Image (cartoon, rainbow, N blue to C red; front, side, top):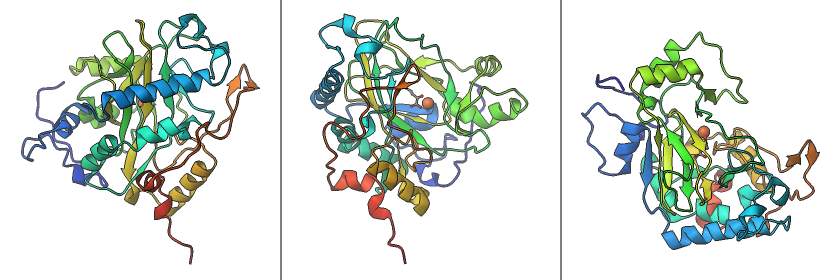
Length: 339
Ligand SMILES: O=C(O)CCC(=O)C(=O)O
Ligand SMILES: [Fe+2]
């Protein structure tokens, strides 16, 4: 990191964050200071440990419930033929998992929602219908999960725009894979992209994704940035600014890495069309990636070697029955009646 003082003006709609690091704003005295300075933070115990472990237990049962041969007591049964489709990054994206009861329960956990309410200084939030992560150690039946350093924000739209998150559900130490971040690089983002403007880009599926090339990685290193593995306990919430370079690694020890991605934004930042699209995604039990405004919607059709998985399902095993707070997070109550 350069030693000069970095002053960052946050683009609307995130003015309320006062995420300034010029030393003139009062500090928050909590995780928001870490977030402003480092571009990521750990909110310890956002979910009580025993509840987090229960959600992990539910996730194991969900995998076993496919009856494809996976058994949590038998590490040999961790094989793609015995599990629903999970990619090498540990992500499970289909099978209506974005709307399973455990996923919704984690998203609606008060300690998780409150952390985002604090950052945005707003209680009218919507939540992403994002994927879940089942990262098993030492898999040889999948391609290697090589580092995929990226930011989840269009370089041509600078400033703070999105706060991503995940709830960690199992003990996650140095050897257990998980989130790797480049602390502080969010504040160098504009300078970085100015310097890299002429480089050939890694192909991206959305303009809101930017992959760091070797030259980009060298730039970060030359500017003093160092990568860091974030360790966490069951129930810790990890949050990061979408400009912060990051990726995940697979576990290397004995413990799997289970987590649920949770991303919220003020409903004020979504249009009525966004909310309509989001409502449709909710009703069809589809995923939205981490974008709470349903900028992208997914599919529940998982494929194995080009063929539709015979275990595909389009409704969660445990039906969606949301409480009032969770239902508000779908955005549906904020849809205005048509004139
Ligand atoms: O699994 C992780 O830790 C990070 C995944 C990721 O890059 C994302 O959700 O944007
Ligand atoms: Fe990402």
